[in-house]
Image (cartoon, rainbow, N blue to C red; front, side, top):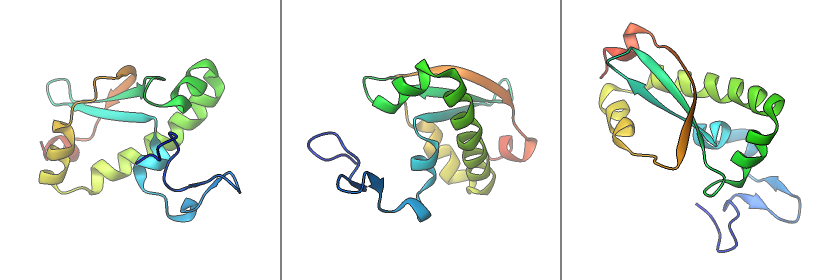
Length: 117
């Protein structure tokens, strides 16, 4: 969620830090990287949100080294999430459309994850 001026509700403007940093949910750690799983190809597809919906995405897009570093963190978090989620929860997440994104990478996903679909 965001405040009226576009900041995350957990962002402390005075300290310029996240107030829940030690226990951030996966979406905070991974964002603005997101994913989809293509059952036909057996691949997890990685997407970057567009700058118009996430200013951090623009920063990452312009700094390829920073994007690569952030992608590895996001990738680990998301892969752990999809491995641990119950099949119904994973299928529900995958139903959510995210049109303001573009693909940056794809890779094979384990059969254990594919079997949940």
